[in-house]
Image (cartoon, rainbow, N blue to C red):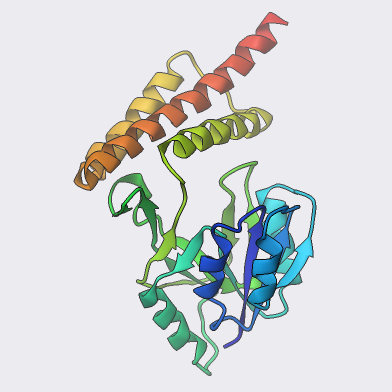
Length: 254
């Protein structure tokens, strides 16, 4: 069963080759929507036979939906540039790819496993982080705000067991910086949708995030990395609700 691999990029030369090497021999075509890379992203894409389309940034939802619209096949695998298919997941998709019968499923989910420092994270809020990435194009679309887009699929969802590997952060500083960026984007989207934050919201939401990640979902089993992830995640949550509350305070003062 043929499928298209769809990826959005911006200066991803450090990651893109790994992602493409993991899927190029499985996908019938590779579609890349690039928002203005100035590094070696385009050359890497060409080496792997990808079809590259340039598009100024439309937001995560807009870029990914554009990539879907450019795919020529009925089935699509949406892959981030900093991800790769594990060996087990590759074999599952290869087996699915060889099927001749029409499948009843409209999409397939898979667990995503993050590489953090020198270890794979298999507990806490980050795992299994099951996501639908292989799906029928006519039954799915991306939706959401400025950050953390979600895929909406109409129909039955099957499941793969192999991990999708995620190389999300260069180091701890990168993790913290991106947490601050995402908190700001979340607060903007939440404000525009009419959401508001009370005086205790930043602390209560942050505390719950830490307890859920580190204790309830056993983040402590990932050792020092699990502690660091839970702490930075709690800080990001605190920032989200503090920024949202600051907007409310500013409006009242005007």
